[in-house]
Length: 480
Image (cartoon, rainbow, N blue to C red):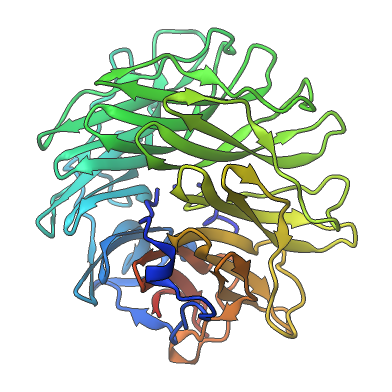
């Protein structure tokens, strides 16, 4: 997953443990994958980019990514599932879109069945890269609209994107993004938030960063989660005055965006911390958890979590990796649905690490009753070589505390990438179950795999992409 696994928003449903998975149960049994039909006039999912999945209720989901059309131009791909039946369409673009718009979708959030918002970027006829949002209402997607950027945005040489989306209710959503600010000898990449209120998108607001920013803060944003209109938490990164990457935590309280605050990192953080916040989830109002990486004093790239408790962000906690981790474990977090919390004190997360024997493996970490446990290595199917440089753990979902699923990719005995899902049953992680791909396909290739998995009660859905014998990427869904 070279391009595909980089960066965003999944909510989980907290259910009672015994009502979902009885003691001694084996967890979900995953069926063979089914092919997702692409829209007429398209041929291949662009570089396997099918990273976003949201399921407000069981068997009613939405997905999004990018697809090549008959002219090989990159367009936006929208997927909708209604009562178990999937349909696909191409995103409609604003009138100023270039002939080859290079659409990349970077965000998807849903309030309810058939009521979602997506966003990303496209190229216009003036050679700008514009940020867009598109809204789905009652199951119908409207044409995308260009984000009205904050006052002071550059009118030319713009490079704007939406990178996060969340909806508290139908017609009330927020997107998170970046843009180029004008009026300075130094080009500045800033962050923005834009709100949809009662179905109408308002002008975006510039994110106010901590005072220690570089002349160009090079803002990058990750994810946002809103629990009610005007109340959200978001995460991102920027470059400080010392040219060091810092993570920021951003809150909206009763409709007012606060000044972003820095992550209070673990005590062993290097002066050149190189912090990167990747994924965020909120178990309840003002109780959120984010995961990221930082550099220790020895230069090791290692994972941490930071939690918001009743609206206050606490000091970050370093995660303990498996005992076979290299001195520099080179931790990679894919970021899509990379952390989930059935309750405010019970979470699961993970990613990829490098071992002392030179392998890339996946890791899984549980928070239990507020305490983060040592990570465990993802157990692969018999005969698998390792997770591989483009493998590891990608996405999580939980039906209840201790009963979760983790989407992953790994190298099989022949060196081909496969997709799999590992079940956690009553607190114990089981080995990965290989996904049987559609149409006799033999690999998801480095750019494909399972990008999203969601369980609603006892009903689970996963979404991803695989490679055909011709080299094209197609989409698949998996259920239990």
